[in-house]
Image (cartoon, rainbow, N blue to C red; front, side):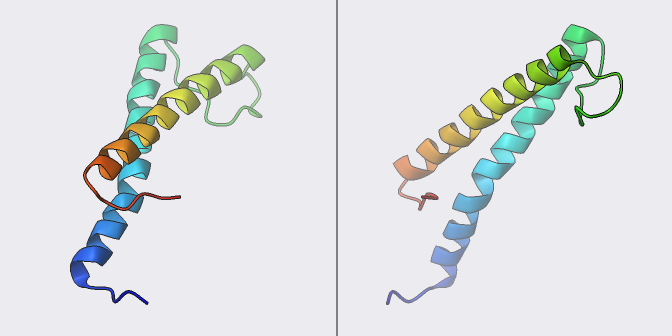
Amino acid sequence: MKSLNTKSVLLGLTALALPALADRLTRRVAAKGYNAWTGENPPRNPAVIGVSWSQAILWTALAGALGGVARMASRKVLSSRGLPAER
């Protein structure tokens, strides 16, 4: 079994945290864009009365696609630098 040193543990934690952080930040930027485009805040809960199907689908597709691309890009950067990536 491979012994763990502080540097490898920190690199592993960074490799796990960075994609999630990239996803979160991208979704925040997407929310600002959604607000600028529609004049409304993105729906947080599609079950709330007043949220239409089109609003819920638009926000889910936009946030999911952009967040997914941000996660993928951060994983590619990590793996190109030799850092461990989630499997």
